[in-house]
Length: 231
Image (cartoon, rainbow, N blue to C red):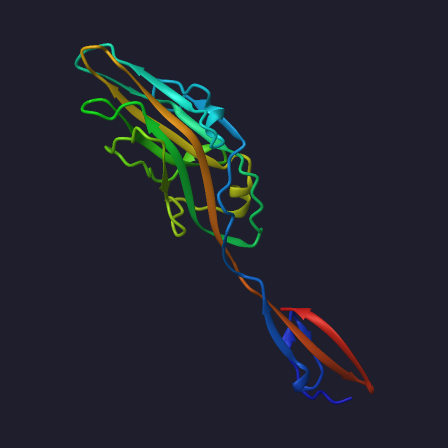
């Protein structure tokens, strides 16, 4: 037979007619997981001194709250810093060949008071990778939480929080978020400021390279066969 034309595909030489070779692309592109609720929450004493009560209440938006309470001890004010609230295990299935492009964390939060010298504020908003706090702090330092429950978003579709991430790492049950806060309570009546978190959700943005397929026609010894190859 005659070699009319050829293309090298994964070290294979294709014999056939030039008009019989067709390239096309499938899959690929930019995508995201949608917001996912973690399935596990716990207090972790890796920072601060005050424990979170009912950490599992931060897993879903149901008006049940993970809380930290700060009872004023002095008229001039008492400042307390929380432990970490860990939320993790998103049940993700990001493709193994994906590139992680960004992470968004949404936190529904409120404070019982944000008037004058009484407040709740972010201290740390970070990622959990392999169960360890990593990356840059995305907390809105110095900004009082509202007294009405409100959703705040941290990160973007192009923000990997100062760390590297792989599909295996974000798919792991040890991937999630670590949250710590600071609270101040002051006044003649020695008030208690309560910090509330109703829900934490996380969205992962990723890109998968497109897959190119080639359809070709083989002419060999008078027999024509149709096959497919992946490039």
